[in-house]
Image 1 (tube, one colour):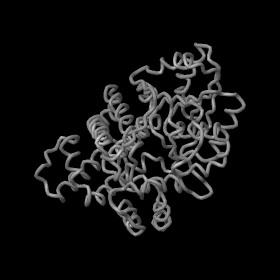
Image 2: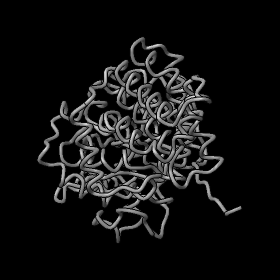
Image 3: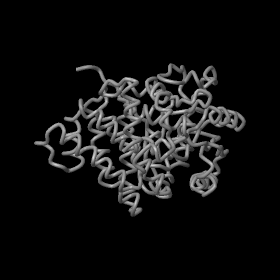
Image 4: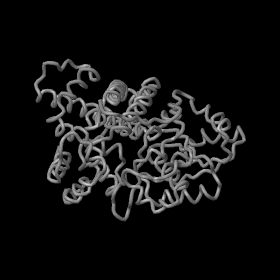
Length: 387
């Protein structure tokens, strides 16, 4: 048996109101000054205040950096580093979705590895020397699992690419998955981030580097999301929200260690070029790409259909497996209000070749179970456009 490695964060808390553990964790670990990293919307509507109120009540010194942008650019990280230095923070508390936590990770790494302050050199599998400034992550979306992964994504606006940075030195020391924070998400965010988590789980299940442990996590995440996402989004059922919140974390445990595939390769380009929300891009592309990948992983699809989607697919032909699997994905996406084509989000046909060229260079591409060419990418974008 080959030697396999799994990296997870030290400590995690789950459940409604889990944020209440934050002050004790900060104090017992001896941190003195906190940089809270969040985005403007969460700051304005008072979601991040649910965290800072705890810091104030416990006399913990903090500074808020609330300028995080969607698909955060390099400038976001550099601005955050400047604020972090000014307030002499020894801990970062990230409150938000993937954008906030990813920005926090970038700040964390540059604070302890100043030779990487260009940010561009962090792209891909990193060889930073030092662990980042400690991070405690409180996700407000049930999708990215950034609180448990060794990945973060920063946009380079000049080159119009998303840099996928992979670094064991950036993983938060504590993840606090407080589903009360997640319950405040607008429907559009809840649906797209939930489908993002499903994409993580499915791509993690079929990636070239999959193993017994990663597939165990991925399968459970797929089942929880498939069973609960519609109710979490449409009915705001708290128990369903709790289960989706847990599922996205479980999916992160898997894909952080085994990688993803070309749904992400293609989605990253839509985010970089059109500023499309990442989860929305994944949700639209997922069925089209799985139809392509099904030619080589239809037996994995059969397992998912049987174990997670509760469909007896044991006697299905290959074609029936692929068709049924992709229909299930489209139906769930439709049920939670996701638009079905990339045409609807402003993607231009004349950009397909440029998008395909960028996707060919994306760090997630090598993990895809089926080999893919530039021409394949163009055809996949075309299919996702013309549905």
